[in-house]
Structures are given as structure tokens and as C-alpha cells.
Image (cartoon, rainbow, N blue to C red):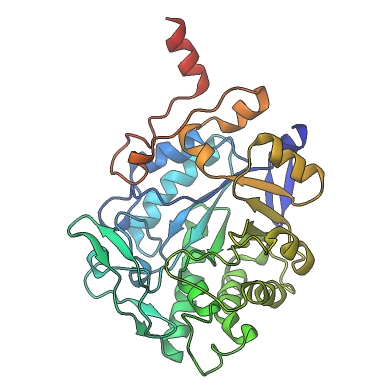
Length: 361
């Protein structure tokens, strides 16, 4: 598995190894979407990754939709994130922030007063989200963004990229999947617009393209990446031709010297997302979904991508890089504590060395 531990450069990002920590919502932010001390420790422990992609973070109050998820639009949020980035950098790590506007996949119960739920069209997502105050609730009926509103959201993303850099992040990643706002624009089922942002695939990917361009103009294209998963149905999203839509976005941003495309394996059996990305994107690929150490190293050795990201394995294995390097067994995570408040099942998973010492006593 030696290829996993080789350094690699993605745009302006210099990684010590090719093991990436995938972004995972863990619902540990404090009041007002501010990162707290548990989040500082959680990311510090996992700084051995060549790159951490921190969890989906709202560029604005209207971009929030779940309980206890962080933002990057207030001074307090930026200060909380700066503690995280300083801790990761002190351990020699690199960290970028995934920007996630949930759009219609939201409940007003998880938003501050005055925040709205928006989408490309007034089509409700037929799903539910959890709120601490009301339990499982239906998603809100979204307001369709006007052209002025679209420009305002793009500016929010641009400012969020600047805020992330000010908070110490090495770059940003745009979340373009899982049924969130960029994918709501990209998918034919949720985008019923007849203007320049709706219609054929080239028009439907325009919003995501312009967001990526805005972030690249703000902090440099070499510090910007984006994430795709063609055919992902999460949050009641569907598209008549997900391969064509994903291809259209790859081609739309191809002229930009972006850091990477974070491409997830498609759940559709007849769609090879990795091959699609290699054929239509000039950017370095971070491969994601379902890898272990052996399959990740094999994919890299075969030239399928530049790096591989791990999600579930990083939850219970803060020292995942060291465990893979030494062939040590991996711990299993507790599914019941994935989204619960506090450090339990979050920042309290021990490194292998600590487990070995405890067993030896």
C-alpha cells in the first residue's frame, strides 16, 4: 500500500500522503452554528490525513437546514473554525472546508429567525429532517430564487470562501451532491426554471459553475475543489440523465485550474462515475466511497485517481493513516452516536496505541 503514503500536490494544496478524510456531518456545532472545543479535538486527532475536508458548512443562515451544523458567515463562527485549523496545522495537517447550502433540504426549526428556505423552484423535498425541538419534521416549502436572489447566494459563497481562508483553511470544496442547492439546480426533477438557469444540462449546471468561478476568483482556483456523485438520490433528488448532467459540470469548469474533483462512486449500477470523471475532467481526482486500504492503493496504482477519501473509517480510527501504514486492525464506529451532541462517539475514540496499552494492563 506504499502508494497511499506518497505525497501529492492538488493545485495549491501539498499533501503529505494520498489519504483524505471525507466531509461528514456530525452535528456537534454549538449554538448559533459555532464550532466548539469538541470539534477542535476531533479534527486535531485526524490531522494525519494528507487532507481533511471538514464537514458541510453553511455560507449563510439561509443555507442551514439541519440541527447543530456549523456556519462560516459570522465572526464567532470564523473564530471557532480558526481554533480548528490552528490545531490541525500544529499537527502538520492540511484542511479545507466543504461549503454546503442545503437549499430546500431544510426545516425552519433548524434555522435562526429571519432565515429563509430557498431552491431553484418551489418544489418541496419529500423527505424529513430531525430537529432538537420538534423531532422528525417535514422539509419546508421552498421559495424559488429570483435572478437577484441567485446572485446574492453566489456572493454568499464567494464571501464564505474568503471567510474560510481568513479562518485558516487551506481551501474550500463546493458540495454539489446529496440533494443540496447546487444539485437542486442541476437535477431536472427539482429545477423547473425556464430562464438561463433551467432547461438543458448546460443551463442547469450554470449555478454551480458560477459559484465555483466566484470562489476561485476570491481565493485562487488552486485552492478550490468540488464534489459530485452522479445519480445520488439523497434528499428526494432525481435527474433524467445524471451522467449527462455530471459531464456538463465537469466540462463547464474544465478551463479553471481547480485543485481537484472529489468524485463519489455512483449508486447507479450502469454509471461509472470514476470513468466519467477521468474522461471529462482535467482536474486531479479524489475517489470516494467504499474503499479500504488495499482497494484504495490498487486504484491509485492503476492511475484511477490522485488520492482516496475515507469517511466511516475515520470516525472510529483517528489514527487511520498510521493503522493503514502498519497493517493494524480498524475499530468499528457506534452508529447510534453519529449525530448526538457531545464528545461521546465523536472525539473519544482512542488511537490504537492507547487501546494496546489498556489491554496490556
